[in-house]
Length: 251
Image (cartoon, helix red, strand yellow):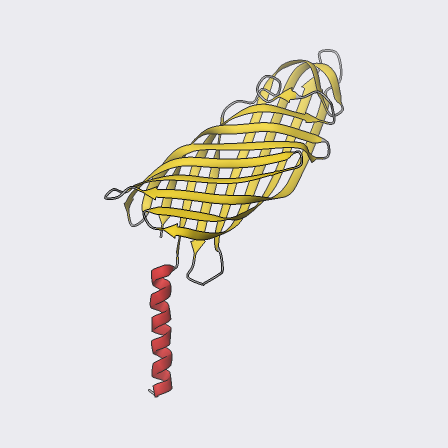
């Protein structure tokens, strides 16, 4: 083996050791129990209540997060996220208006199906007993609200609105690792406000790590969507809040 080959192998070994010590990440998969509140309207001046009019109630959906951290200087770390929000409701309505459904009495059947896809670029500002991250999130919202009203003596009225938008948001995370324990406390959130739009979400949680980086996390999650024109005449002032629990692998 030549001296150049030896130097090459040594450099490769040194790089492998450095990356093995510093490349890491985290994956979590959980269930989010969310209760709706607030109002929405579609192409009308009157708003409908999510609970009283659309008859939405508490539902459970999946949430996923993955963090990828590396040793490369100046390049941000990456977080990927996904959450699904679904609601459906049935009941009777009076003087109900939604899109081309104008002032109708009858039996209502409604549904929300919304997905949120996140890509976050962030930097670690602190990485000790207290960990602090900050960055920017690009969130893609893709959803549908489907409403059907069946009057007693008239044909069924049906209206569906699709919405999708890409939203930049500020991202922050703070984590406190309680010394001499396997417990940590965490706050994580995204937020943006401009013109007639305000979006934010946050999580407050506690985590217990067992072994090999495997642990459980439980906490409270809230999501707020407030926009005068989310898309195509759709206005929202909606909140979804409730507890969540996740399995976590920190590697």
